[in-house]
Length: 609
Image (cartoon, rainbow, N blue to C red; front, side, top):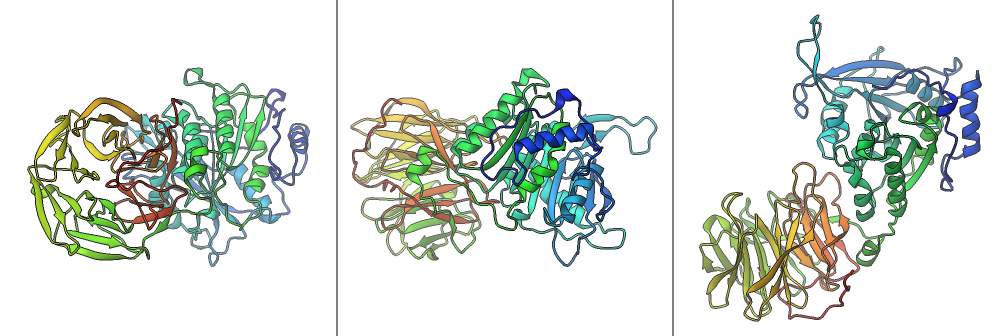
């Protein structure tokens, strides 16, 4: 764990080089002033925001330990809480979370900045990574048997965010100051910042990246954005993902490579800065000449806090990415809008010729219709339909997996069986009325099948061997067929023969996968008029070009779950509808989707790429 005493630097560790920051970076302190500030720290004494000042009110510290974590079983996590003297429980305080613990230096900085009104009234919380001990506390021979630091902070999944939000902060709120004041933290993510060094640096970024609704200000010192637990993937994900409302400051040294087998830590930070700038984030950085040492980052900590909290309480908004695909398919001022109703297990989404979207909730045994106004209405009850698809004549087809049959429903909701013996998952209907249905195996080792069902009911297997086949779709011109695998990172592409048989199968589309669970979770798929493929995945909607490369990712608003279904709808098929099972969102797009049952149309080729 890093020291929490006032940092002192040798000449070799001075931040000797500051890059040119954006126009607002570190205002009102400029880079030359920062270098002089560091030199003053070495030659002091001077009074600055990193040194105790007897003329300002001083806060107090509280301490606690979490020993009953459900997210990290068996661990002990100590935590520290700084309460400023100006704190009034009647007014919710802002939050600064520091990974690897909070100590006297951070308390001194907050004392000084709050007194100068350079930052709002902030309660500081420090979290020490978990340890599992062989013997109970107080035992003479107590020793650690497992250290959780890298597992908690370097991981790129939701475990640490869930720990912070569901276990750490509730434990903090149970404390009271020495005078009996209760802890009242603001629930607003715009009021929350997070910081840390090394593994705590990437952990700080992950907390905001996974939960931008809860943390919007990040200071990462010598962050380990390298291949320990997948951190090296962040620059690619940042460039592809629609920007999130996060403000970030990065600090590192040009000789930072504590363990080169994971890659150059300094070069990884440079890649992060480049990706964040490309993606339109409010980003600043300070590069120095030092190794893996957090003391230079602590020297500029007061000024970084000023920068992170500048113009508060104005909200931090998402920027505009230079990603050409995001610019092509999205509208800058159009985001996700939630449909005003919750569901038990919403899954299949399908749109008719009018653009009305039909949503199936098999747990509730109900099919809903969502019209132009966005309000769901019940279309049919007492039927557990999973996947759905419309045919060319307006007939709705549905999969009833519990009864191993495919049904069609007329405009009044009356149903009739069209095929039996198929436990389907994905379904699509061609302009000629032919159905294609994906059928995953009964267990993980059992290969999936793709069925073709003719209008007269004749059925045959046109492909088999996929693992956990899910969403299926055709290219706009009908020449290609796509099938997703739920448990892998692949979507397969086939060439459609004149008789509808599928040939030339390739694992063609490559998807990003989550850390836990380690799969894409691919469900429904759809195509737009440009030939881009939209996939409902755990990461959000992943959009691939014609050559199988993910070029953009549209995450759902936090804290939504994985995307379980999607389709294009609306009068002009320019609304993208998605569901995470409990909620439904829609977003107006700058491109129209292709109605699966529409007659084949030519679309522009993107070339070999």
